[in-house]
Length: 283
Image 1 (tube, rainbow, N blue to C red):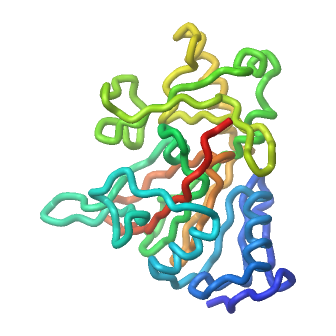
Image 2: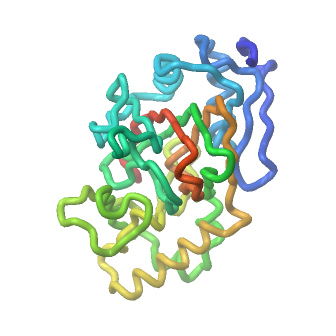
Image 3: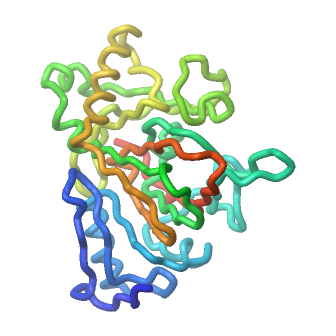
């Protein structure tokens, strides 16, 4: 296990070499983090969008303590999957009496942004790996800053000042998008081009799983434009694929990334502990 980092100089940031993602070396999240270390970690997170701490051994209290440094923690929107704290949720394929007992148990999951269907979507998500399958179950991340920059100029003009409606129908479309969403499924409209509150950079704030349509636009034109957006953000050169190891703590910025999950063998155990940090209302 890594020793506790106590100064900025002892932290090593190892970028993935792609459009986003970095490993942070020299931090033990099971111990309190001093202010200088936190500032260095925070800066690395803003710069790399996704950061990973390997070989961690943390309980839920340590995970909560770390997440709380970044702001108010979100309460779980699916209380039936809550853990020993209302901020904790378990994602696994564990079963009891033939039924799954945790959230999002199996299968591939399309690109999405956590809690984008609420007024104040998640700022950050922190996921801790407790059991992982031998292969698959990778988490893919798209850089939404770069996705906006890569859009054709005519698309940028058409979406300027527009809002998109995001809907999440957990019961019917938890991992793959469908147009037939339940009328009472939670939903909220946000700017299609979001300004990150800390970096002030523009991000393309859409995702294939939860984005429904561009408000005030003809349905076909909306669908055509959104497809261009999806294909742009899902470009291979815009993706970081995180291959999980036991003891990984992965943290990502939901204000400028979208993420997805690759498929895995359903009979192999997969268990993750998740918490999210409440974000700002997008501007």
